[in-house]
Length: 224
Image (cartoon, rainbow, N blue to C red; front, top):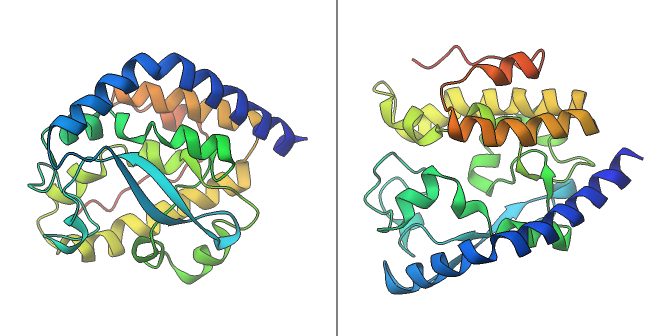
């Protein structure tokens, strides 16, 4: 019943969001067309349900060749590869909005583990890679998205490691713990809390409310 109502909520929210956000989406599409390199949407191969691949949709926020430039798949704060509109879209998470079409198509759900590219997925410990998408669709948001709401800042402020080493040593293992927490606590109520907290931390990014509402969520204590 949980998965039936989860899918029903996904469809209803996606249809409502498309209608509601159309006045916002159209100016963004025009703005992206007129700035940067003139392309609007970014399609990327991601890992989904039961480790099957799909293509995720986002608003384009970086140069087309960015995976082959600079720090590759890792984005830093004030990254020079980000387009003029891209910084704002990324900070506000508006760049994620086209994923509502992925939700409607059934590729992802509103809530779940974040869908990763191969390189960041392979940074997970072996045991987590085996479980993270087993029987679970990835999500537009999730507990990992809330805790790592400003991942770019965390990586940029790290002074000890190369960004890729820091991601593999600190961020990937903790993200894996968070996704395992979600696997153990998945419920309709947990999903509703995560949806609320996703909006909450955009407005109040330093808030500790997620740890109060999501009992037992592993806390990150290795930011050195």
